Length: 37
Image 1 (cartoon, rainbow, N blue to C red):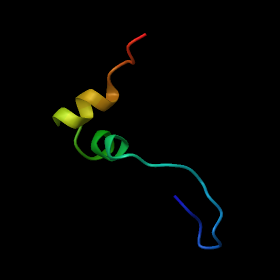
Image 2: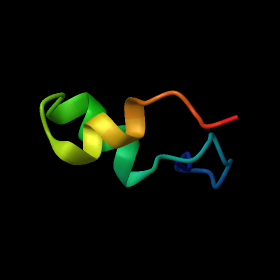
Image 3: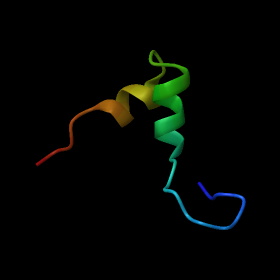
Image 4: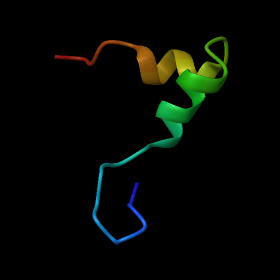
């Protein structure tokens, strides 16, 4: 994400959008899962 003046605010991934828009999707499930450690 970038402000109008060019300042970088952060990164949004497809997984972030999937979790926000459709919690029931397969991509949202994978994106919201705990990392393997």
